[in-house]
Every structure is written in structure tokens, then in C-alpha cells.
Length: 110
Length: 118
Image (tube, rainbow over all chains, first blue to last red):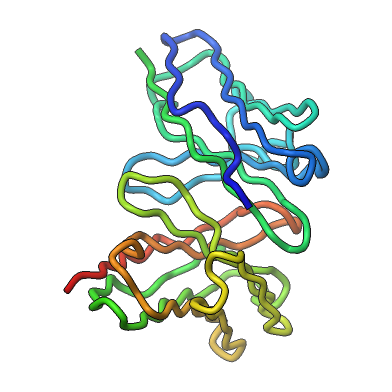
């Protein structure tokens, strides 16, 4: 299966909001509410930020939110902070016990 | 607390195989599936497959079928990922990650760097 499509990079100033899109197909993102988002700082393991499209794990700031429309899922970070600068990946169930990641988005806080 | 501790870095020659371990603790090992994910230098995350620690069933994406084997040892709460016929493009950090709630990766190992070089 092909990787989900994310913008290579996004940027924003502290305090602003940004949105990262994750576009799949009707076979993955469009068919299941099983999209999760991960934050990865350099040299570190990924960290779960959002699961099942819009749910936030305990301990994750409420500045992070997720949504989905059709074949596209989105991660929004509001009140951008310097510590949010990282790579972000979406991840979706694709049916038949298979899974697929997005290509990743580098977030720069200006 | 949940912990996934992986084996150390490996250096392999092209054509060889590598076996990476991931020891789980802090939860009931057989209750949670495990994924393996890799990340080549400067690249994104790539899903390599899933194993059910309870029965040992596995599923791999097409691009890894025939080259990857995932196994588990319930007596030591350890899952293994073996990749064969290594080539330079397999140089990457390999992660194990626990599947929480059936769909998301809630805990990750620290990663194991595998370098393939002649």
C-alpha cells in the first residue's frame, strides 16, 4: 500500500495555530476511524499524540486536536510553542490487518 | 510502568540476517499486539508488520513478505524481528511498539540501529 500524503513541512509563529493534513484513500483513512498521530523529536522514539482520529491520550496537551473529513485526517496544534517543533506522522489502519504511515511533516516554530 | 527494551545496535554485511529483540514489562504481555516500525536515516516511519503475542500470528506488508519474520517468547515476554537478505537500504532504526486499544501505538521501544555495510 502507498504511504499517506502529508505536507513535507509547515511552519508557524509562537501562539499561532497550524494544521497538518494526512490524505489517504477510501481503503484506509476514509474507511476507518483509526487514524493516530505521532510526534517525533530528533533522535527520539515517536510519541502518541492523537488516536482514533480525535482522542487525546492522558498527558497530551489539549492544544493538540484531530479531525477527519472523507479521506483526509488533520492534526491541529493551537497556541504553538517552541517545544512543538518536531516531525509529525499520521498512521492509519488500511484493512486486512495492514497499516500505513504518512510520509511525515516537519514543523518549524519560527 | 510499561517498558519496551530493545537489543543493542548491530552491524551486518549485505546478504546477512539480523534479529532484534524487544522485551516487554509492566503489563500482561499476551494481551497486546506488537508492531515493528523502521526509520531509515533522514526518512519517515515505515510499518513492517504485526504480531499477536498470544498466539504468535503475524501479518506483514507485501514489501517485506519473504524477508521478515516476527516471533515471540511468552516465557520471557519478548518479541523478535528477524530481517534476512540485508542490503544497504535496510540501514535504519528499528522500533517495536505496543498496540493499545487495538489501533494505536501507545508505547515504543528505544529503537535499535541496524547498519548494513560491507
